[in-house]
Image 1 (cartoon, one colour):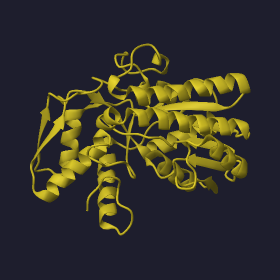
Image 2 (cartoon, rainbow, N blue to C red):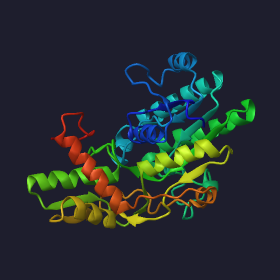
Image 3 (cartoon, rainbow, N blue to C red):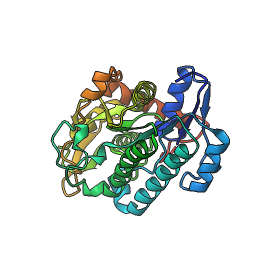
Length: 320
C-alpha cells in the first residue's frame, strides 16, 4: 500500500477499527477515511454505495459489526445476524461496484465448529456444527467469508478474510453483561475494588480454554496482510497460546483487585470447551504477536482508568 492511498476503516470507533486507525496513522498513511454512524448507516446499501462513489477508497478494512458476549448473543440473536449480514453485504458490494482495490473482511474465531480439533486450522471451517450460544453471529461471519470468495471468483475482486482470536484492548466494551469475558472481568473487578467487595462469582466452571490477542497486535497483523497477502484462503490471527477462564480471572484479579476471591457458578453455561487458533499460516507469512497477555491486560486497565478519570467519553458500559 502506498502511504497516500485512500484507506477506509469501517467501524473506526470500535475496538478493532480504532486500533487500525492508530496503526495506519503511526505507519504514516496520510489518507485514512472514516465516517460516523450518525452520518452513514452501514446497513443501508444504497447509502453505502453513494458514500463509496463519493469517496472512492482504494483499500477497505471491514471492522464494523454488532458484537457481544454470551448473554448479548443469547438475548439479541436477531440483531446479531441482521446487522452483521447487512453491513457486510453493503460494504462488500459497494467496494465491488466502485472498483476498490482490496477489501479485508474481519471475521471471528466463532466461525469454526464447536467440537473441531485443536488448535483450529483454517480448513476446519464448515466441517461441523457451530457453538449454539453464538450461532447467529457466526453464520453472519461465515457468510462474509463465502461472499468474499464468490466475488473473487466471479468478479476478480481482491477480498481477503481474517479470523482473529478473542480480542481485547482500548475502546473495548467493558459492560458487565454485554461485553466479552476479559473486558467484563476488568470492569467487575474494578467495581468490586471501588465498593470494597472481595467475593466475585463468574459464569461456568472456569475450565474452558481461550486465546486472547491484544487489539494493537491484531491491527498490526491486518495492515501486514493488507499490504502483502492476496490469496482466497482465510488467515487466522492470534497468539497460539491459551489460558483457562479460571486462570484468566486470577490474572485480572492480580492486576485490578488483588484482595478479591474468585468462585464460579457451575449452573451457568461455559460455551466452547476449548478454542485456540492454529496460527502457523500467519507465522509462515512472517508475522507474530508482540504483546503478552499480562502486559496487555495491565495496559488495558490503565487505559480504562484513564478514561474514567478524564473528561472525555466513558468506556462503553462503565460507571464513574
